[in-house]
Image 1 (cartoon, helix red, strand yellow):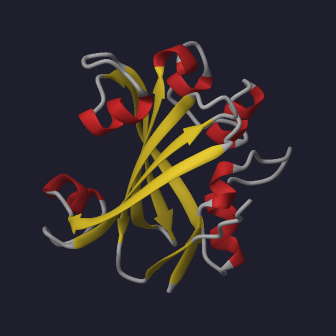
Image 2 (cartoon, rainbow, N blue to C red):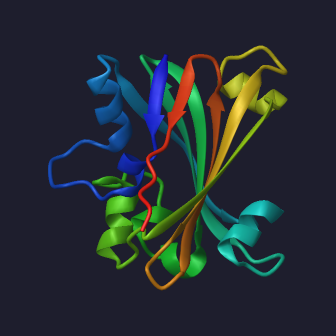
Image 3 (cartoon, rainbow, N blue to C red):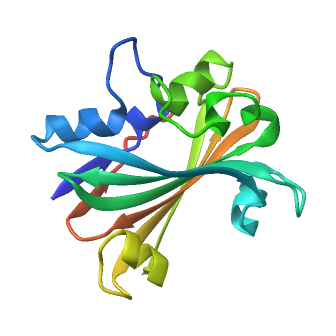
Length: 176
């Protein structure tokens, strides 16, 4: 069983602290790593464009990663940023971001005040199954997250396609 909490992924990292995925895996006695597949500027899918508040046909910057657990691909993460936020920053460049995107964004003034998450279950597409080393049609979890700052400005929308087997999502909500 692999238990995942969203909170560490929304919090900036301290100097010298490893990324949330590596830390969470290590706490479970596992090895977490990630492979950056692509960084590009393109028109996002309609659901992502809507989440980012983009007009139809407007481009955004996307960072595509494969998350690995003990060397096995377990998640595909596509993080999208408005061009106005990402252009000219490490978000729009191929390569690892020191402290991770959430730390870079916080240093740019974009701290997560609200995160909206939507969870769906469906069969993996052929491309997803190939990247995750799954048989075609294997069930996956799709977690879509939209991040807003304290003024309600949306600055990131991510779509994570996760291997469902052995996955447990945990949420902590504080009212008031």
